[in-house]
Amino acid sequence: SQPEIEQQLASVNINIINSWRGLRKYNLQTIHDWLIGPVEVELANSNIRTLVFIPDGGLRDLPMSVLYDGERYSIEKYSIAVAPSLQLIDPKANVRQNVSVLTAGVSETRPHRPNLGALPGVKVELENIKGQIPSLILLNESFTESNFNTVVNSSGYEIVHLATHGQVSSVAEETFLLTWDDVINLNELNTLISADQKQENPIELLVLSACTTAVGDSRAALGLAGIAVRGGARSTIASLWTADDLATTELMTRFYQRLATGQVTKAEALRQAQLELLQSEAFNHPIYWSAFILLGNWL
Image 1 (tube, rainbow, N blue to C red):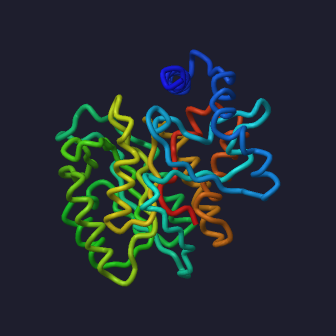
Image 2 (tube, rainbow, N blue to C red):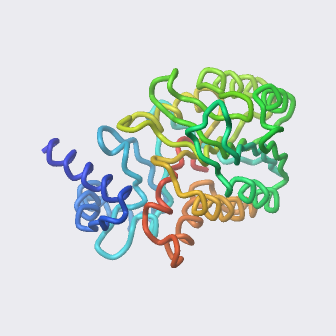
């Protein structure tokens, strides 16, 4: 029944985020058996390697990578992506060569948002990305709203990676990204993305690596993805909860290592990065590796 499903989902989400309570794989297996179990044999027979979910209700809060079959998490078998709706699914492989990244972030506490702590891992994260893919870094003083606006509108970066505090909400007025001198709200971000869409090289991927979704807002991440995709960004990577700073740095470094090869899809690059954390000693709990989801174009 619907209440039973929602209760199971709520229990799983609480246990993922409150990792000290211990995650009950029984609940994850129950949800796996509901969603994947009935078609798993057919998936194997058809050699399916990527699953795309269009979640509703409490499923919007659950990373599908953590579904458990009794032996393995789903991420150990499939690349996984999420779509806000069927209307927004138009997968196309990125055939461009020499992909470049615009990275921007704030690693220090700012007086206009004193409640948001420092993110010391951001500097390392952006430098690690630059070591994998040609990148322009806007860090701290250089990441002002006007400077970011100028760079986005004048350059054809395929990937925009934002490593800064922010909140993603289904309410536009409550969604913001922290810059050095101000905040960028959702409407402003949408305008920036749309402006870039008018050029020959639209944004292929928007990554929000240090944002959190609004508490209790199950539509937040999907809402952002829908706006980003409609605005011109073909896909988005965002987190379902506030991810650990060091784990995020490790995950993003590995993601771009895979993406830089040009031999895997975005979904597979994220999968391989998550698997490395899952197999590590320090970050093997799902709270570290499953927070980030890929929304939109998975190729």
